[in-house]
Image 1 (cartoon, helix red, strand yellow):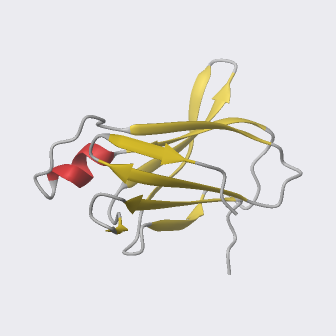
Image 2 (image 1 turned 45 degrees about the vertical axis):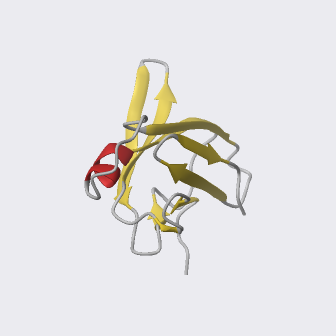
Length: 113
């Protein structure tokens, strides 16, 4: 049973598999800058199903994916040492899912379900 307002999923498009072991940082923008909300690591299926609290307040958030370490583990050069996705949260929404499709020299993201 999912208890987190936010989940994520990372797929390694270059290898055709989930991207396991990626450290992820969730932060919220405050008037004084960014404040850490939660951290997690993608599981064997490339997912984090419990990232952060049960509810997020409305505001601007960002997820930072530490992909350099992921690619270094397989000795794969990468252009992006990290991937940062900034997005808006409306606390009235039931759930946010932020997937990332990753390769060493490109990435894409979208609002999932």
